[in-house]
Image: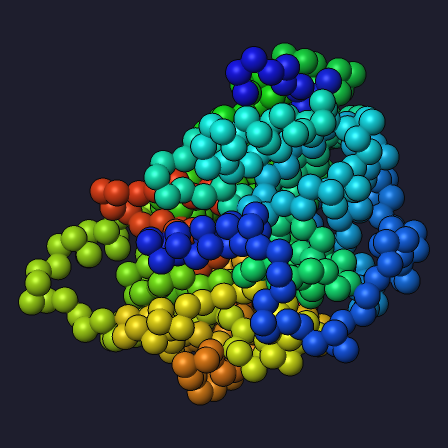
Length: 499
């Protein structure tokens, strides 16, 4: 960012990394369609003129007067499905007619598509992106329009820029957005028939989740005087968001300008990021929000778009974090084991068997989706990981969308105090049999939290892998993910799982 005029907001390991590089290279170098292309009879082609908000059937364009002041979780709109009050389009997120500045991060980019969603004559863009080396940074900067700037987060070795955070500045307000998908058309419901590229397939018949909150500009004419406003106690959400942006290399002036907005209504929210050790930050956030439980069990339902080479240690660490542990419990247990005391790799602790469920689509679910196998390029797990004795296949359930035929590209966690030692799922799911191709199971519906105690949810960009949540160890690599969490009994989270 040195030498650039920066606008203010207010004026898994080796296997996981190998997969990431394969995807990145396929995006840049491959042009042919994969052998297993989607069945075109199952996909409707959309002309460009019908992709605009006004021309889409059933569109319920959100006016900027209906702000998300208390925060909200929406599912992305999908072509061919009726609009509901629970879904949202990229146009409704960006509000291009009033958008002055957008700070956008993504793992995958469709530059032309993104520019078509933004008024490039009035909106300045700061893109937080990954570049392999200085030559790539220089090339990206040279090819960008004059009102587009780049921020390249520092990487260490095998790091990845996987965050999808968006900061959107309007006259008088700031919108913070945490989607679970990338800035590409197929992740935002514009399915059509696009060219398949390497490992990333074209028809984006995916469902994403999007967290949004709108923060008003602190008014000079407020009943509080300016000095009182400046002395207001920052929320944990504000503090962690600022730390994340600073670590990413965002200019200090821009970060400081966040204090000109009213973050009061983020007091019940947590901002979780996984730069170095992710689940430690998750545990700290759970504790800060007053959701920690050191004695009682919690039920944890995890929805992931991809699974890494996971094992009981990682799942145990995430489970502990959901109870408010800062990572030391699993670390101490792991490092204190003597060679002869190690549990067999294929044995799962009873606590994890009783209280953790992982939702990931079975091969049959993918095959019968609208786009078929060709639409599931970003929804993946290596067969050799799945067949490993240490992979917790017994925790995996088939993930089926209530919007029939849509695959989920979401990364979510639903956590609540357990009502019994043998817990029922947040979703009503039948475990069913498992196989080398995937997990059997059921589908999801709403469920209330148990015992009147607070439940909470995470929505973000972290899949279920060691490369996403990292591991408390001597050697760690930076992977940039971000997410938001809140109590499920707070108003924006009452219907967090709407399908």
